[in-house]
Length: 233
Length: 392
Image 1 (cartoon, one colour):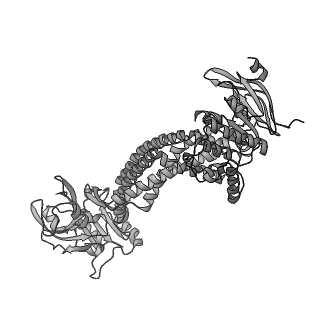
Image 2 (cartoon, each protein chain N blue to C red):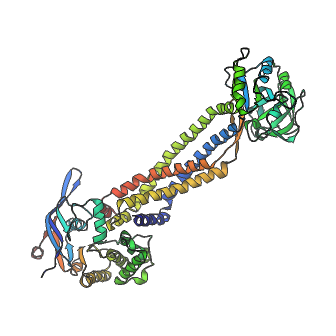
Image 3 (tube, each protein chain N blue to C red):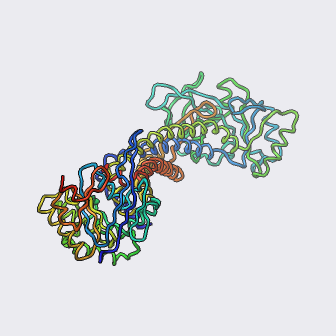
């Protein structure tokens, strides 16, 4: 029996206005992502994968079409409601970690919890647990400048999962790391998916990174193409 | 929401050392603006204080009808007697009215440390003048004698003009006058004057008319009776004013000018400071664009971002305002300056940086901070998150 659908995308298009020209980045796209899937979104630069990731993560609105995550239709939410929705349901991992340089690792991880009603003590416990999951409990007091790239990305992953989101959205999470460290991070994401049941959508250029995913999706010119077409090419 | 605002603000404030240069632009710009404005306003406050402390509500001054100041007034000897005998005037133990017919002359004296001369008031006062003005105290030397060329000098006048120490000789008209005493007068404008016996002054300057008559009223409420007595007397054409009202009216024009100058100069500088703050805050927001976008991606509200940027601008503005105000207070409060008063003579007064002025300066600083921070804050909050993440 297949997993229930978590993300449902129907007939989604996204257009940007560049001067007088309208550029269609996504065209009539349909996609379903099951609960507990680990999806790798691949494709050349400009294919629209980051745009799609932003739409799934509620960072942007589609020009047309419908996006549902769980029972919520997010394409019609206002910016304010979308921000609240993101805080409850999405954890973000960015290529360059996007940690706050003036905050320690634990304070960085705590940020999403400041949007909840948890007490300070509960927040501390959750932060400690998240840092333990990513193997950085001993680096809690360190600032980002005192961490290696791999460690910084682990902190970013801890921040993404500390509020127990429905969905982890990762934009080139290993794009700034060496092979060995990238494998560690991807192993960690895979463990989060397999052992903790986290649904992950990851954009990557790296075929090796994509191998960690349970499903690979390929995009070109704003549309999803099937794997068979790529292999044939 | 408070947790969000607190968290973002805390991050902004912790990031200030990384943006020290831009932050200092705001702090110094606002400090200079507030410092200059408070200093100029301190002149207005000091001048106002000096003029307002001159005169008492239970004293009245009589000038020729239509005269706006003592300098343009003349009162004959006959009229002075009528004025002093009017209803409402207090009489002393000797049965004589407590009143002084006075002559006012402008004399030129060299200012200390300067080549140029400035005008000083030489006031000829009557024998009852010191009963009339108990606030005048001889602090050094002695009182002048009538019928000889002696005078006493106000403490402020002595501080501003050269050659006014006791024993000094001053050439006035065709005669030489000796400084025999120094007086203070509770900091009022008489401290900028020279006092001598009125008959000796009139004689030396070959005059026969007084400029004003100052009388002690039986009580403040006796003013109307006194005024009515004089203004209904067909032999007199005089204006009667309470002493307090008279000195207030003398200061009005200059006070307006000083206030205008302070706010005009302050406003121009404030506009400059607003642009400085805008520039610095735009830079600060641009430098933190990725951080702000990340926070908004995580779910922090636009409002918390706007509010935190505003708080940062406000904090920097407050620091600048406080520095400017303290600077003005340290370096200008109590400084003695002089300016041309109502009689075209120098009025010496002390710059007064009052608590109200300090608060005014801080309020201006806050306004500059809010205006300077608002637009960058709105821009930071309105930039689409995805675009801001890409730009970062």
